[in-house]
Length: 172
Image (tube, rainbow, N blue to C red; front, side, top):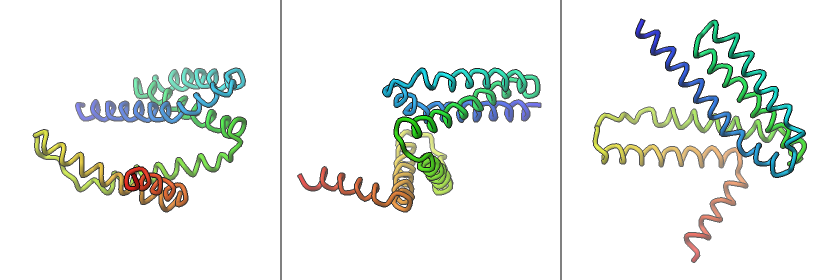
């Protein structure tokens, strides 16, 4: 019984975490839409998001309880994020939506790679110094993984970044 409770709690937490990630990803698109004055044109996205959230939550709450509500939130946020990204790239930025999808795939690849490469780090000590040392290791590994993968998929942009950093810090 207790394991079932913790499983539901874990699912609930991950669904809300995913919904918040979707909300965070969508923030730049909201800013672009508002800055371009396209609020009225995208109002239907927000209305559909609310309707989708309510319908999925009502259906799923009867089956999975609070996890069903979290699923409704995550579903609505995902729809809204994709719709706003599509709208802003098509109607404001005039860029291919394929570049957005590529960016998301690369980001997911980076996240999975960081999780896999830092999994061997086991935190066992309870001191601030031990925690700081481990956090530093994770930071450097994550930085190396992120730069490596971005160098593979976004070579010219990553090289420009390296040049800017080099000029800023080493050619003063």
